[in-house]
Amino acid sequence: MDKRKVLGAFLSAALSISVLAGCGDSSSANSGSTQTASSAGSSTVTSIATSTASGSSGSTTASSTSGETVTLKIGASPTPHAEILEHVKPILAEQGVDLEITEFEDYVQPNLVVDSGELDANYFQHITYLNDFNEQNGTDLVDAGDIHYEPFGIYPGKKSSLDDIEDGDVISVPNDTTNEARALLLLQAQGLIKLKDGAGLAATVTDIAENPHNLKITELEAAQVSRAIPDSAFVILNGNYAQEAGLSVSKDAIAVESGDSEAAKNYVNVIAVKRGNENNEAIKKLVDVLKSDEVKSWIEETYNGAVVPYDGE
Image (tube, rainbow, N blue to C red; front, side, top):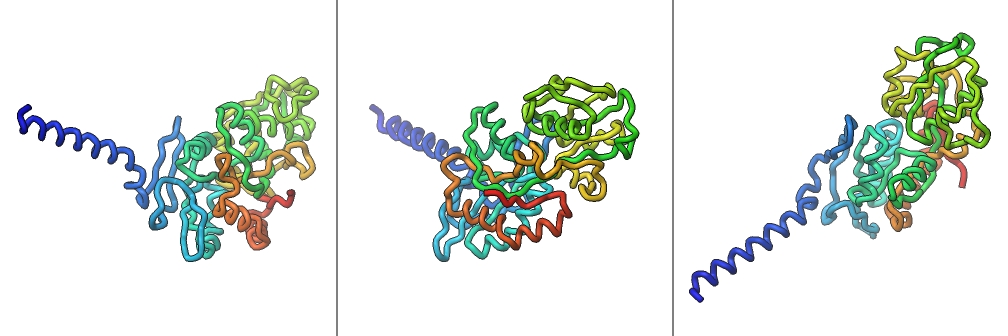
């Protein structure tokens, strides 16, 4: 065979291998730059921390050793989760953990990116939603730590008192499975509707057995409920979305879940990780700091009842 042809074939093969290797390492090449992620619908993802420890790559979290800093990548809802994480970031830095926080505006992408390994953990959801998400999506995420509880509340829209409720009034609620049930249970606790026996935490509008005022329950994506305030008699909001809308549980809520309600016992907000990572050293440090007395006190002082530290085991 012509020597020039042999040399040309060899160079072509070498070039192909180098191109494939470059594609496989694209995530490492981008470490330390501003992160963004694509989300379904109109959800928005914004990175608010981008530092990466020297020598780390991808989203793998290593166990820290003396003198070594590791990066822990975590997704969170802006309020209160990302705010709480920002507060503990300097504390974790002293323990050798560089906390890198990415904010999400939806309830789907934070779980998908942890399941895929793009992020190490997330902090935005309660345990009931996590369990339901796993069942519906085939993911295998687990609770690495119970951190806080956010009381669900009924807030004024066009009306400011439940005593003024009239036939046909519109009440806007979240439409995801677990949070809709939570809203309906709160309406039932106020005597406005009655659910079918046994509906519990799986209740939807189809489980309303009695509706004496013929209330129109409008189901909306959780992030959109506060925007329906001008068009609703009342709205029922998750604690974080009430905060984002500038509403105070203690000052603005007309009715709030009681601490011993069925819902309250099942809606503790957790640090979620992919199964197998719950005992990672950096994850355990994060959970320990979030459950420390100093952080509990800060949460109580900062959120004035909208966010309640969880004291259960």
